[in-house]
Amino acid sequence: MKNHRLQLLVPELVKLSLGKDSLLDNERVEGIITVLKEIYEGRELRSILCAYLVALERFVTQTSMKIEHCGTLSPSSIEALRSHFEKILGRRLDISVAYANDLIAGIRIFIGDLVVENSIAGVLNAYKKSMGTK
Image 1: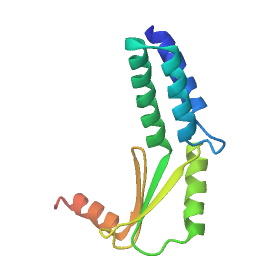
Image 2: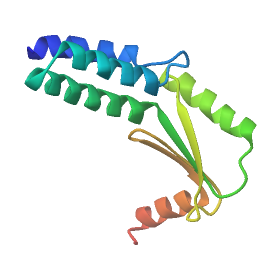
Image 3: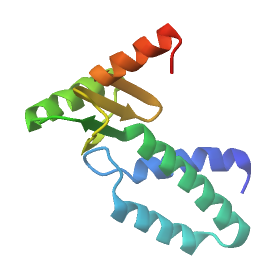
Image 4: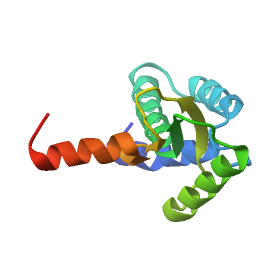
């Protein structure tokens, strides 16, 4: 398959992979792979599937929000954080929440390459770096 056609096909496949909540739907992905296997074969199938996998991984990374906390975090706080970041980024986020022992107080949020830290540990680490200590 020509590279240009592949660049046009893969984003459309990713769009078709999304459910009503604008997040990845496993059943849709399985269906797309089944159809691709019926239409393509050999190297052409392999190149499409590889490009599709890379695009799906990129999508998941960009739409996953991991919240680390050290205290209690209410469901309403989690939803407020989700809403805030969805508004800023302009896309739906899939949330995971985890307890982090290394935080003294506050939260740390990961969305793709973006890291937002609002914790005492983060402030202390920034202070240490500014002082030139390790």
